[in-house]
Structure formats: C-alpha cells, structure tokens
Image 1 (tube, rainbow over the protein chains, first blue to last red):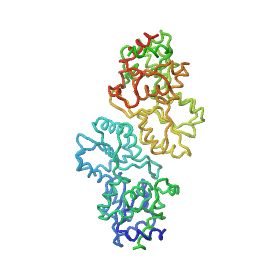
Image 2 (image 1 turned 90 degrees about the vertical axis):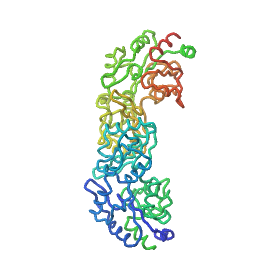
Image 3 (image 1 turned 30 degrees about the horizontal axis):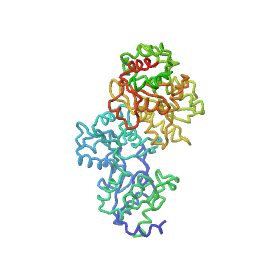
Image 4 (image 1 turned 120 degrees about the vertical axis):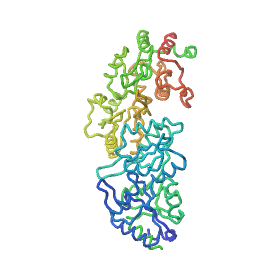
Length: 269
Length: 269
C-alpha cells in the first residue's frame, strides 16, 4: 500500500479530511475520538501540509461543530472547515435566492444574513426531529407553488448511525420532495464537484496535489476522484468490507485509519 | 366524442369507476358529491352493466368508506369496492409475509387477520399524521435489517388536495424508503396491472368489455389502458387542462363528468 502510493503521494501539498467516521464516531453523547486521529491532525499541521475538514455536517453551525471537535482533543479551527450550509449561503446570495429552511434548529444561525422573506427556494438539511409531516407538507407546498421549483439539498446521504440506531438522512427526504414536485434537487456538499472545488480553492491547492481521506466510498472517495483528487478510504466509521467490491468506485488506497494514512503520506515527503 | 366512442362502447359489459374526483370531492368535512354522479351510479345499476369502484383510498376501511359514500347519496356496497389494503392482504397471505404497517390508524382493521409478529416486510399507506420522523425511521430500520427488504406501497401518488391544502401522498414516502434501502417498492393499487386485473376478475368481465372512468390521467387512464381496457378521463377532480397534452397517456375519450360518460355509454347499448 505504501509502495503503491509512493508515486503520487510525493506531490501532495494538502489533505482534505472527512470528519465523522475519520476523526471521531458521532453519537447523542457528543461522540468518541477514533484512536490516533487527534495526534494525526497535529502531525499533519506540523508537517506543513495544508489541512481542510470537508464535512457534510448540517446538524449544527461550524462554530459549535469545531467547539465539539476541540473538546474531543482536535486542534482545528472554524476557518479550516468546509461545510454545506456556508456553501449554500454563497449560492443563495449569488443567485438572489430567498430560502425556506427545512433544517435542524441548530443550523439556522448559519443563514442569519440571508433574506428569508417570500421564499423562492427550499433548502433541505438533515432536519432530524424537524422532519415532521407538517413541515414536509409545508416545504412541498412552497415548492409546488413556485413557477420553477428550486430545491437545494445539503448532502444526499441515505442514512447514518447514531448510538440509538440508524436514522434516515437528508437524501431520503430529498427524494420524497423530488418525486412529489417532479424536480431534481441541487446537492450542496459531498459528493458535489463544486463543493470539493471550493474546499480546494480555500486551501489554495490544485486537485492533483490534494488527497481526500474519508470513510464513505461514494460521497468521499468517489466525489473527490471525480474532481481529479486522489482519495483514500479508511477502515473506520461507516466503512464496510463490502465497500471493497463497490461496482463503480475504487479508492487509490485503503488504510486502517487516519493515523496510518498520515504515517504513509508523511513518509513519502 | 359520442360518435368516436360508438364502435367499442357497444361491447361494454362493465364499468370501473374511480371514486375521489369522480363520485365526490374529498375534504376534511367528509366531502361533497359531484353533481349528477349519484344519479349516474343509479342509472348504471338499472342498465344491467356491472359496476366496480376501483379506488386507491387507504385512509380508512372499505366499510367506513362505503358508509361515507352512502351518506353522500351513492347506492354502493362494500362488495363493489376494489381497494389496495384488501389486495395487499391477499398478497401477504399468498407469500407468507408478516407486515410492519406504516398506515393510517383507520386502515389498520383491514389487516386484522394478518400475522404481524416478527415482520418480514413493510406495508406503506397514506399514513398522514402517522408519517412522523420516528415512524419513518422505524420502518426504515426494519427494512434495512432484512436480508431481502420487501416494501409494499399502497399506491404511488405524489400528492393530493384537501380542503386545507396540498398533502404529500404515499408515493413520496415510498421514494424516501426506496432510496434509503436501495430497494424498489411493489405497488399495490392503481396503476398496477395486477390491481386492475383483480377488479376485472371480481366483476367477471374481460378487459375489452370494460371501461375505466377516472380523473387521474396516469393512475386511472394509463393504468387501465395498459390492461387492455378503454378509459375515459372526466374533467372533474384532479383533472387539469394540461392533462390533455400528456406526453404518454391519451384517454379513449374525454367527458365533462361521470353523468355525461354514463349518458353516452348508455346511448350506445
């Protein structure tokens, strides 16, 4: 594995890390760091490589997210996080869109500066308990009433695991609204190409000098590769052995965890 | 229109009627009969033509549905109704499936005789207020935990109108679960071919001697035509003028309402 990576890993100048399942395992209790990951983040920073956390987290603001990660021992800052809500705000401003938000209560502050009067689009996040029958009907009615319905979805995940079991992710509700309104959602977040490109632009690193490290074969690995990046899959988080037989996506390498990935990459430099 | 229908309408022996939007307009208050429809049902029966109500109604039992229709002045009986829940029960028994039900409370009695212990499939209806975040997660967890997930959906409607506005229909939630579990639902109800075929079998009339009358261009007209029936679209209920430009489905004739359809058909006999 180290040998196979040697050729291209030598050119690396920046690393993009998925967070949940790579740095820590999430849960109602705030989550648990994955062994060796906090130290790995410190080693990346000490090496001079650029670092970017590239996450689809939409249940809270970046500020609170970073606070939680720092509490778990990770030396990271808000300026190092690329997340769907700020990327969506950028698109909303650019296109003069005024969103109706169907998102988690804790995410709402990310949209504080956005005009939300007389909505001409719907922004859908992982709203969790806010995914009520009434709220879904309300979002649907607004969309179907628009001359050209615009549905922006913060990610397209199918489901995720919490300590109390599997939960439907935003992608399932996106599909419900897509079908009901006969529209296609615009996905902001991984695996969208534009989302990875903003993360790269924020780092100032071209795709061929960047490596994405994630646990999600489709959203992390596949998405990054389609942008011209190399991508490693860690065998932590939502990784499943069956991922290694994925019909479409093949990571540039597998690593047991973030610590091993950083070991190998730093050896090449 | 009458002239164009003459050729084939003469052979007709049975009529299948959609209910909501053809006999009456539904609403929280119980609904309002469509002018001339109650008299039209009486004329069908007096003519000797066989009659079948072919409905995707899943918010209540057939017994209560017929009770409501009788209260609105329609001379109909439970034995004349083909509805998704009884059709689903037939399939469940046939295949030894034990359902977890995500349906409207008032529909549950239709499944009284079905073994629901240790579920090996999920049956999804228009659950309305029962479409909660918790209930959707529960149905999802059961499905994803099955070796071969079986999802049976009572219809695949996108949305419908009630007096207080548009509501997402069962099809939207079906799509959410299909996506999350990477399965394809089996649809019981219109436009499923098997569903129309059971309605025909119950009437004892072959498709070429039956006419479907409905307001839904896809689920009523398109579905019936795929079974070899002729199908008329009424310009009541959810009919929209744009239906007349539907890219795939063209009714055998348009009629203003059920009363006009029955006038024309009875003239041919």
